[in-house]
Image (tube, rainbow, N blue to C red; front, side, top):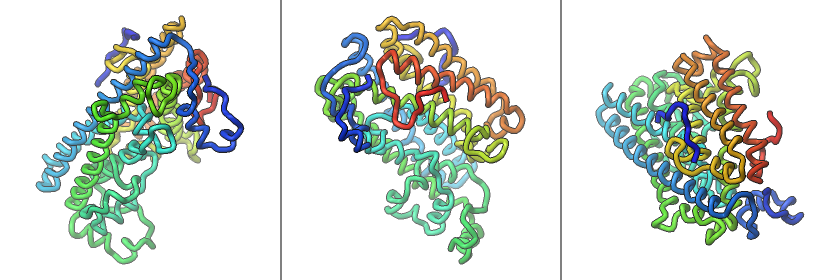
Length: 405
């Protein structure tokens, strides 16, 4: 347990495999589950206790998100029925709560939330929030065709559903669409007819369908972790001693460690570096690449991502409880845990130092504050890629560079 003195929240490598694994990438990705020889650093008692803590934390977080999703659906249904300013405000508040909880869970992409190519993965993250994939034109075609009124809505591409599709439906007030002029909704005049009829009711109906879809997957995720129903809690908590997914405790720890690198690939590179114009941007800045263009919550999302990271690294209850810091302390590396605590506190402080309510405004009026946040997050990920994985004999995830990029 790492006891923080800063602000409170708002809120190895495995056994060498055969050459055949090198030829088959999917086998490499699942070698953690197949290796049956235990090794790693630290005492077995600490490793087992930390894995139980991770499982408990994940269970608590997914249950909280499910409760939030239930409230979101109720609010969306009320708005569709009443179409008032009050019901619109209420469903937006409910969405805010759900996305805040989900942004914490973005750091928990192991087990059922992971992709189906990973051990225990069921794609439930992508079904809930597949950002950065988003297809506004598809949403608008589904609106025109009234697909949100049909059972087939759940079978539409995830980039038009989930929390992202719901954000557009709830927060975008414009009457334009993102489809090409040649698209049938424009060339045949069906979008113009929809606008003439009134988009408010259509967006409310789409929002209700998207909210129900989010609730369905939130329930599936909570059920998938339920220890009383043989859920994934048992697989992670019992890694190396009865788990059918993780044959060793090291495999379980690697899965959770890999999830921490969301802070590197998604937060540092995609949420910050792209809008800042550092990568994948042909102009000085690209504010159009922010994560939350309709609700303007990109800054808050990054803050919640940092809080999710802190829950896993230092303990679920605002740094109280067991986490990776306890494994570091167990092998005499408390100083590394302390440096990580300082880096996380500095990144949270950097978010709070951005006075503008959104990244878009900050990029226009105080870009240096966003650059400082990027630098602060990089300090965390640099430590992750070097001392953290080296000391605990963990693997870097596929696609993550080992240098301080």
